[in-house]
Image 1 (cartoon, helix red, strand yellow):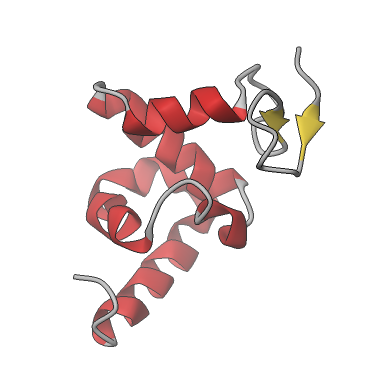
Image 2 (cartoon, rainbow, N blue to C red):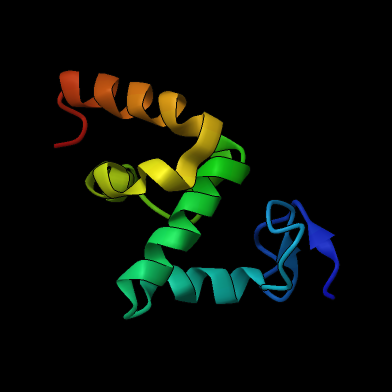
Length: 97
């Protein structure tokens, strides 16, 4: 397995939030842009559930999270309320659709 890292610029290493899956940061980015919608939701859900919220923005933008949020509920676990609150407040302020 690749070593874990908190340095998200080290594309060849495994991000700290993928502690149980041997996937590089580059592979994670590719999966988030890949053609399989189920895999994109799985990876995005893991990112939102396991990564620090400030690190999420290294991979996706706020509008992308807002657009996917209705489909992500079962992937978010205990972090669901946080993301729903955050995106809800940003919607109320007109920062995302």
